[in-house]
Image 1 (cartoon, one colour):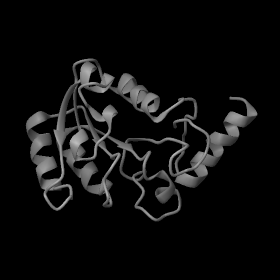
Image 2: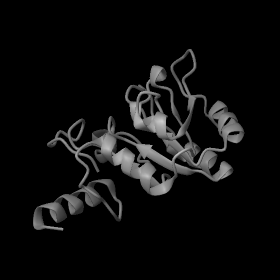
Image 3: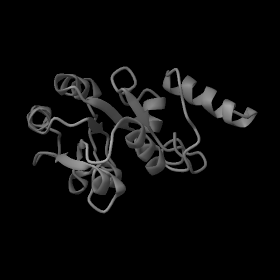
Image 4: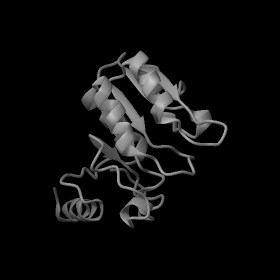
Length: 168
């Protein structure tokens, strides 16, 4: 790593309280793609939030690489706009995904990453937290951090972190 890259790595680790960071992705989508490519094989099952319920394209949506290369299954929100974690657990037990994605593009509530980890552990899945849309809140301790619970976390650098375009 060069000096600038190492500075970015050090700062990311400091603000998120994590041990490792990769700041090379050009976008959050690339970071998410790297997670899938590193941890699962084409055709493996993933469970993410449905795009129409606030999820992201890279969480298994059909037009995305994640929906084309993997068997994608979805959870959503209830009529009150909240995730029903018991329903997520039911789906996970049936589907048996290799990865469970927690995170969203449009979800106005706190995401319970601890509960997601319990579900992931129950079915032997990897918990992958995409915090691109809440990273600034996590860094400022205004939203609970997924780092103690998720096996891997991705984010962007330009949304709520307000930096140049990139992914981590």
